[in-house]
Length: 296
Image (tube, rainbow, N blue to C red; front, side, top):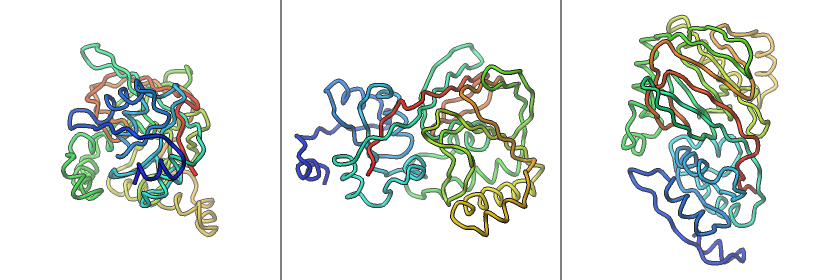
């Protein structure tokens, strides 16, 4: 279908680069970049997109999304086709390029070792990082989002908070205790739940939310609020209900270009659904418009 789409829209021959169990796309992207690719079609989920974006950000080489992952959150937030391969291929060869922001996470572990990675959807510590660590690729492949039920339930039942010292845009250092911290470039989750209402993929900013639920009832309130926020984008009644709901103390939001945090003990971190181990310090910044994505 890809070769046919290229011919139909007057493109030259295509080249194929395989990923592997040990490489989610970085080496394939490096090979495609070295070969002078005009556009890179990414067949996979958010983790594969993240690996490719880490290589091609800032190069001017556009990418196109062929969503085959578990969540496909970037495609969901962009309004790109998610269940129509023909439309996705057509966008790759006949669409226009849209510039979106890329997050860059500088991670430091307890040994002092530092490494840097890009992401396009969300970075997280807490619930989502636990999900990334304990959910196998095989389970995600066969069960989809059902594979996350067990780690979500375990994390909610334990409801353990951690201490962090953080600052936004080089402002004053603040201290907080949270169960989960998310730094996002996109706001919508599966099921149309809206985690970060102010997030835009091309606004040059990062959105941060700290989840601080008081027990299981607190998690119920968070789930209800995220669902209502998702509905509010489509329903006038939901927007009215949300306007009367007031702020939820269990959700603390902020926004900026740089987010820095240090933890009282090593915390697991995930980037776009991939686990990157335990860290003691993070510095997350944004590169405005660093990735070009083909869209209709």
